Amino acid sequence: MTIFTKIINGEIPCYKIYEDEFVFAFLDINPINLGHTLIVPKIEIDKIYDLDDQHYLAIFKAAQIISKAIEKATDCQRVCTWTEGFEVPHAHYHICPFYSPDGEFWVKRGVPLPKTEMEKIQTSIIEELTII
Image 1 (cartoon, rainbow, N blue to C red):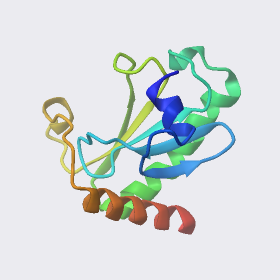
Image 2: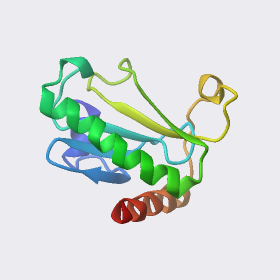
Image 3: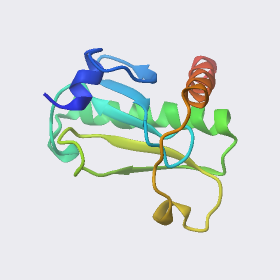
Image 4: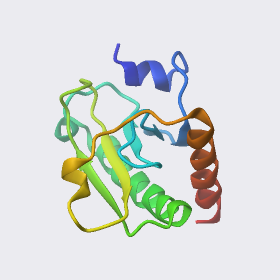
């Protein structure tokens, strides 16, 4: 069982942003920028391109909705998205606000932030989701 499955099952706490039948989204605990969110399918599949159509499409539909909420909640310049798959063998999709086009993505590394900051951005993103 992956750490993401444990998060989905409530065995490990998280800052949940969104959930539907197929996906679960939560704040990255080592965010590149405040609001950095992960979307994971509710099934354990290592590679995102091995997902069935329902889970694959649900990730991108959720990303569309959540990205708009993050953009409003953070007043960022752009929300960037990407997949990677080496740290946890459970498909996941990153959504992260960025504030300049100067390549900060390639040089910044995620760092833990205080619980109060994480809770504040969680609340802000969720409030924006209810408006959308």
